[in-house]
Image (cartoon, rainbow, N blue to C red; front, side, top):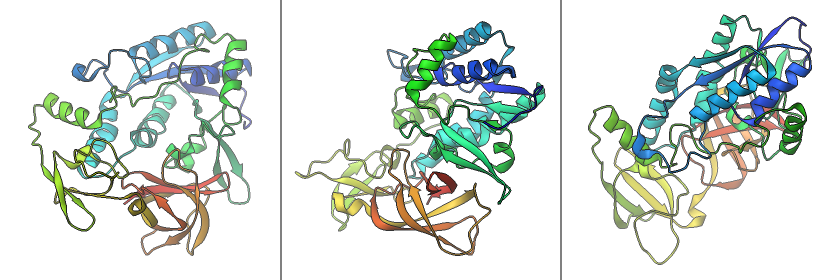
Length: 372
């Protein structure tokens, strides 16, 4: 980890989980001045009809706030809960809904990182006098003297690496951010938490998106419209195969995502997958497994991390989903510097509009953008 001024105050983003709790304990053991801060992002009492019977696995719950406060008390550090619900609604929830209704599959965790956790949270940390923020993300940061840029590298624990969700971070944000767990594996973190007496050492990891506790995105969208007192007209459309043959009807493209096989509402005697959605016509196109393969994509709103930009084709490895194995590709710049074409050496399955394409050079994050 980089060297810090001995009197620098670090604001730790405490989610109530084992990772961020261990970060706080680790930094305290190293002698740093800390303030714990929990972001209140979503009112868990909203949309009660969507709540699962068991809250296990939910992120950012009231129990998480309680656990974060308990950890701060054990460590004896100042603790604050900061309310970002309005910001979260505007920059994460509403774009999430808009993207789904436009036939794309968004990544709310990336939006939250870009516009809340490493944006508004940094501003709030400044308000309490903090020079840095620290989080429990599994990623590594180094400063490259030759380029004069902060570089983000994949976490040592490949199964927990979170760089796919962090490609949108800016240089000025990385300069003030610490990822103390990037060089550790999850079992090591839990062992360290036990040794440091962290109360959440055995707590399960959260799995679900905080504002979609039951995992049903379509049901969330419809419930959100009801809550807002707005009519949600079910835009029925047709399900077609790739040859143009009509196979059935559906109740809105927001119910489908590229690569989906189950829940299509049609019976054809062979496995079919969603290969495209068209919100303008409300048409969903399905096809066989080979039809999911794509050799190229276009990424928009590209943010470069390790480099300033590219001006000629460059080889890279590209991830198109969090659990996707990065695939060899060429990055092709266009007239618009915020748009890059990605040409894969081998076709990739289910390239999904709305997801991110993240570019790597080995373990270094070059940058990333949204798949058109």
